Amino acid sequence: MSIHDNILIKIRDMRDSLTPVEKLVADYILDNVADIPHLSIKSLAQLTKTSDASVLRFCKTMGYKGYRNFIVSISASVGSMDEDQKDQYTDIQPGDDLPIIISNIFHNNSKSIEDTLSVIDKNEIARAVKVLRECNRIVFFGIGASGLVGIDAEQKFSRINKMCHTYTDGHSQLTAATLMDKKDVAIFISNSGSTSEILDTLEIVKKNGATVIAITKYNKSELAEKANIVLSISTPELTIRSGAMGSRIAMLTVVDVLFAGVASAEYKNVKKYLSKTHDIIASTKHRK
Image (cartoon, rainbow, N blue to C red; front, side):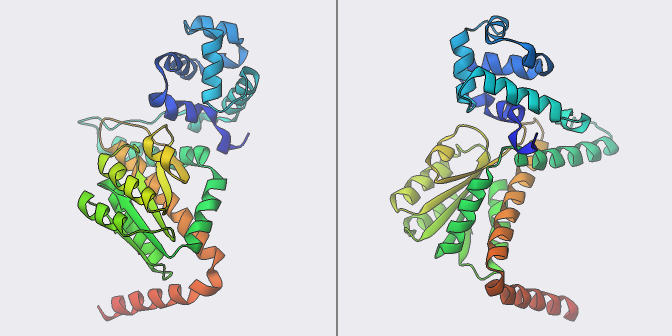
C-alpha cells in the first residue's frame, strides 16, 4: 500500500471534528487497530456501543462508500506499517535528559513530515502550483509560528521574482486583504484553521475574488471549508511546544514543495533570477 493512503492517520487527525458518536468509533479503531480488519459492521457497532448505521456514517465521513471499502483500507494501512511507523509521537516532559529530548524532537519532526505525506493531496498541490504560476501576486497570511512559515515562503518566491509579501498581524492582514483582487492568490497558513484573525481576513479575500490556498491541519475547519485549494498537514497536539514544532516543520515542507514545483515548471525563465540572487548573496558573504 502507498503511504499516501493511510486511513489511520486520517482518523487520528479528523477525530476532533467528529460527532460524539463518530468519536466512539474512531477511538475504538485507534485503540484496537489490529482487530478491526476481522470485525463485521455489526461487531464493531456492538463494541463501540453505537449502531450499524452510525458505523456506516463514520465510514462515509472518512470518504468511503461502504464498510467493506473502509475495512480493506484499514487492512492495507495496518499491513504497510513497519515498526518505526507504529511509533507514536512523544511529548517532551519537564526534566527529560538532553539525549531523550534530542531523540524525541527529531522523531516527532520526521514523523510530522511522513504523516503529512500520507494525507496531502497531490492533485491539490498541482492545482496550487498552477494558480501560483498564473497569478499576478502572492500574499501569505499567518499568525505566530505560522507567520514565520509565511516569511520563509516570501523569501523563497521572491528569489524567482514572484511579487509576494507576508502579513503576520491582524491589522496589516485586513489591510492587505482589502487590496487583493481576482488575479491574486492568498495563502493562509494555520494549523488549526480556526484562528480568528485568519478567518476575518479570509472573509475579505473571498469577497474580493482572490484564489485561496489553505495550508492547515487535516481536519474539518472553517478555513479548509472555504478555501479553493486545501493542502493538508498532519501533526499531533502535544502539551509542550514540540507539537507546534512539528506543525511548523510540516508547513515549511509544503512551502518547499510549492516553491520547487513553480521553479521547476518555469526553470527556463527563473534560472537567471536564482543565479542573480545566489551570486549577490555569495559576493556579500565573501566581502565580510
